[in-house]
Length: 55
Image (cartoon, rainbow, N blue to C red; front, side):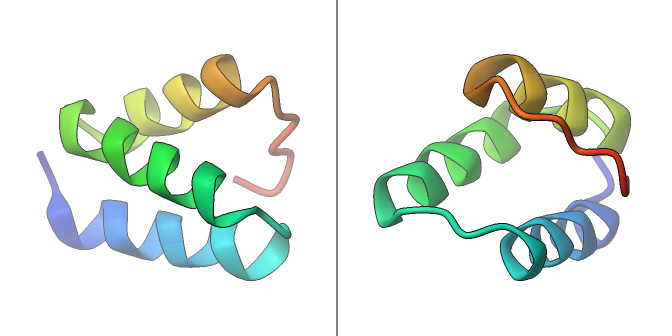
């Protein structure tokens, strides 16, 4: 797991999208179990049904 890369991705997602606190906590829980950045993005897309084109 590349923690630094995941933190950069999480910061860019939080900066560009408006999420509720509940959604942000859910995303952080997803980040804990994701193995790499690609899996993190796919898990977030699947769990929240998002379209993250900029990543």
